[in-house]
Image (cartoon, rainbow, N blue to C red):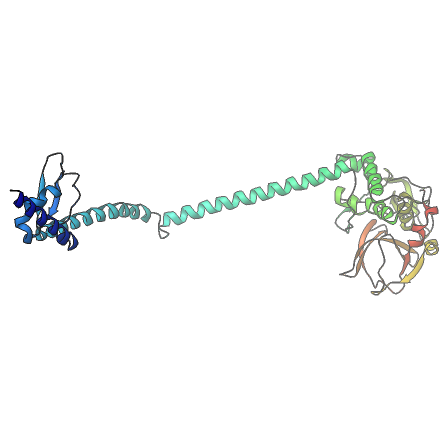
Amino acid sequence: MDSENQKNSESLTKFKENDYRNNSTFKVPINSSQNTLRGIASPTRANNMNPYIADLSLQTQNNSLEIVNNEQLNEKISEKAETQEEIVEDSDSSPDTTLKTKLSFLSIKNPYVILVTISILTFVFIIFVFLVIILSEIDVDAKNNSSSSSGSFSTNSSTTESCSQLSGKSLADTLSEKNSSIEAFNEKIKSSIESAGKGTREGVVAAALSITSNLCEEYSVRLPYKWGGGHNSKINLADGSWGANLPSVYYNEAGVAYLYEGLDCSGFVSWAIYNGGYNFPITSSEDFLKYGQTHDMSDSYVAKPGDLVHHSGHIMMIVGVNEDAKTYDVAEAANSKDGVRVRTMKFSGESSNKIIDMSQYYDNKANVGG
């Protein structure tokens, strides 16, 4: 008996070494649904099944063990594989098919999708434009509030053709109708001059701009021209009576009638220099030639803001320079038609025009004190 057991043990050992190595016999995991263990038994080892059944055996819930040969196992594996592929195909294709069905509605070819998309984009665009407009208005209001809080005007020059001339209504009444006052206006003039530098070239330019470009930009009006206006006495800041009807018709030496209070050319320039911080006398247009060196107007000579332009009995002040365009912005009390304005003039000007370089006068501290 011992001899037979030893023989069987040797056979089992040899079988394991050969058959495991040749993959003729192996263990297969338990199928969880059937709780069985499937194993392969080599036909050539049929006589030796008993010795290694114990080696392959596992206790399952129903204590069953099925031994099949290679051919049977291959068939079962093939069947199982086909079943698994079908399951995988079903599990993969079914959601995909459903998703495709759902997404088919979102196809760009669907007219409803196109219509809805266009509507949404249009709505978003309208909202965007609306927000841009609102933000722009907020920015403008902020700038205006900043300007009001600082109490000063812009230092940029601009022409005044678009603004109407005061004709029979005083500057004080006009400002009141525009929710301001002559007092508030004068405070802004004063603040602008001080910010630019009272008693400097820049302060003089700020004064000239305050009653020309700034008055036009903020209140849409221009001052009228009056021959002899501004010569009676030195005027501190703006005169609230400018623009009002004269008590009686006023005629110049040539017989031209003037109806409204205002400034003439030399009266305007004298006012700007005086209020800019200089003890400047009220003078005639010809007298300005003695206050600085003169230059012919040409493209080769570039004047500065604050310099003057003399033209045959007429005096003007340069308040802006555009070197790229070779032009000046010139402030002047022109005539009864155009009033006190800012216009553009080429560097070359007219042959009779002369630039008066006011640097020597502005730099002389003895002249400061207006």
